[in-house]
Length: 128
Image 1 (cartoon, one colour):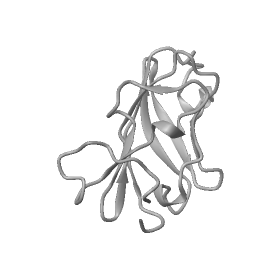
Image 2 (image 1 turned 60 degrees about the vertical axis):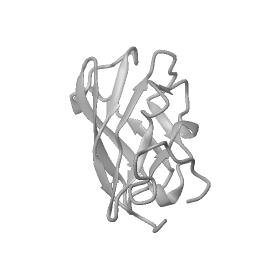
Image 3 (image 1 turned 120 degrees about the vertical axis):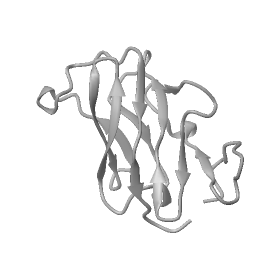
Image 4 (image 1 turned 90 degrees about the vertical axis):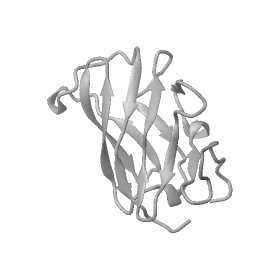
C-alpha cells in the first residue's frame, strides 16, 4: 500500500486516509485536495468523495484502483447528485467505480454538471 499517497490527517498512523485523485478518469475531478480519499479502518474502507463532473465524458469516474482498496466482491455505494440519489458500483474485477444512468434505477439521465457526492463503507479485501 506504500504506492498510495497519504492525505494530511490528524492521526495518519492509526487512521490513514489515502489520496485517490490519481485514479480519477474521464474528466472527473475532486472539489479539493482532501475530498477524494478512502479511509482504511481495521475491517472497513470508508469512501467519502466530492467530485465535479462538469467536464466528464463518462459515468465511469475511477479506474485502476489497487486491489487492496477494493472489497472482496462488487458492491454498491450511495451517491448524491443535483438530480437525486442513486448508487455507484465498486467493481473488483475491472478495478473501477461508475454509476448507472439507467432510469429504472431511479437516476434520470444526468448531464454530469455539478457535484457528485460518494459516501459509504465496504469491507476490506486484501490486507494492506
